[in-house]
Image (tube, rainbow, N blue to C red; front, side, top):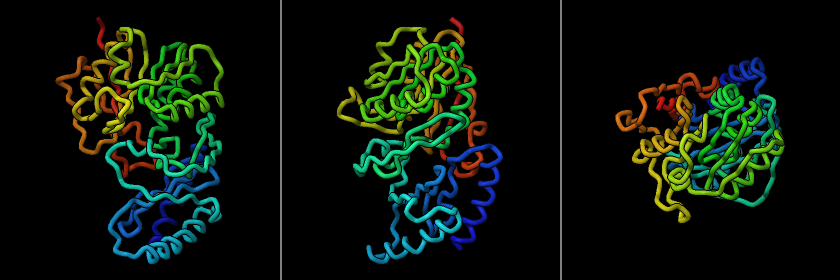
Length: 309
């Protein structure tokens, strides 16, 4: 059953990936309840994540079951067992898991996307360093970035910042609370662009926005975790509760007519338009969903334009 399903989806997706010259994409995501995997290709390597569930097996039985699945994945994807990296992960509502370090192997490699290079790690963290579901959104940012002052909030490993810089942004500021990910973002930038006015800012985004100058940016990306209660934060973050306040803070730092790309992968998210200080809100979730996430992506994406003052 698993062999047949994986063969079918891989044949279909691989054709589209080749046509679009994409080498990093999701192949399988919990298609069959009995095989709760997320499988992603990163060029010649495979990221295999198993969503935690009550499987009723002993530890030895589960290990045997897993070891029986890996040869199937290796055969169909044409990737040797030693290049399949396994992780067990919980299906989280938010992206809080990206900050949880699981190992210290420090095995990084470079993967390409749209002619740009990114450092990928398949061993140490729950997430790999590149959110594949925002492939289209990143391209939109690059297309709009020319001569713009760009701000990336909750920047993670800075992929949006790299795209903005590659698109000719006049200034690129990236803000995150994690020094680990800011360093990773800097390294990604160095692989691609060397230019003045590129800044990496270690700060609590909510607090930083309160102090940022008004009308100082033309283009902003904000892709926050669903929930965060880091001890380094002034206050905890709950994206459903706090999104309108955060968006309004961004609208304040945007110039008139400036654009915010706001995204969240909280499944039950409801945008509170009545509390947001602009009517120019466009749901672009469908338009930014890549071919390899069709029908299996739980995230929302909006293009929000600052009002004329």
